[in-house]
Image (cartoon, rainbow, N blue to C red; front, side):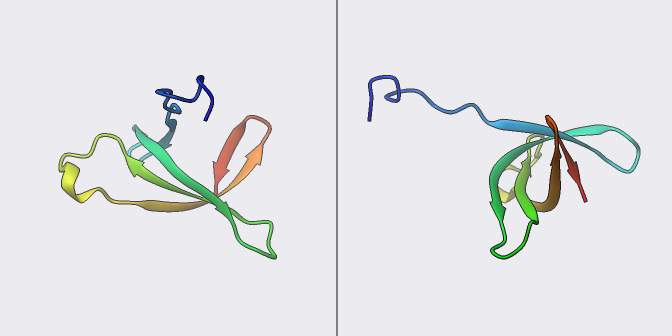
Amino acid sequence: MTNEQIGHEEEPEIIYIPDEEGNEEEFEVIMKFEVDGSDAKYMMVVPLDSEDEDSDEVYAFRYEETGTTCSSL
């Protein structure tokens, strides 16, 4: 581990997903992965504004990268 890595935490990746009413909700990406033998990419996210921190829900989305943005499918 280098001196730069000691005490340095990686900043969380935050995405915004609109709900049914069009309000954008914040989510933290906790994992991205690809399925072997497929071009499909997936991400696991948790809501940032969870009222009960002990029971976080985890959501999985399939996505495509288009330039600098991701589109959920």
